[in-house]
Image (cartoon, rainbow, N blue to C red; front, side, top):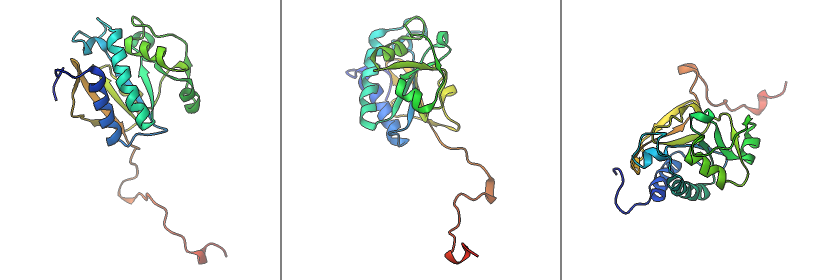
Length: 195
């Protein structure tokens, strides 16, 4: 699928991508997904030059619909002016024991997407950083710093939202040990338990 298909709303485009990623990565309750989005890029402009609140509203609607279907949590990356802090529900920050930072994202300092999320969440707050299970980067905003090790690139069927290129990733645990490593304990015989 290519950029800006006629008749497709931005909310439908982003929902298709997130649902595909959620299915492929088996995302659900307890998982955290980082969203980075340049509304300028979605609108066909250079990142950081033409933030669009109406674009952020459409993107949020599509993302929230998929989130409610699968049950994972989302964190929205702010722009560099807020050091790429993340907007999330306070319950998520507290559950994960994250470091809170103080700011209110606005379109010119935080970005339109983070600003929209801050207005829409029940108890929004900002975390300094996270280690998400998966993520979607709309417009090359560089979300990699907020993904767990090891990031696994994911290529969704839809590669653009509006005019913005989309990159996605899931993560997996680090594989350690090599050929002599053991990944499952051997079963113990009852006769060897006591002596």
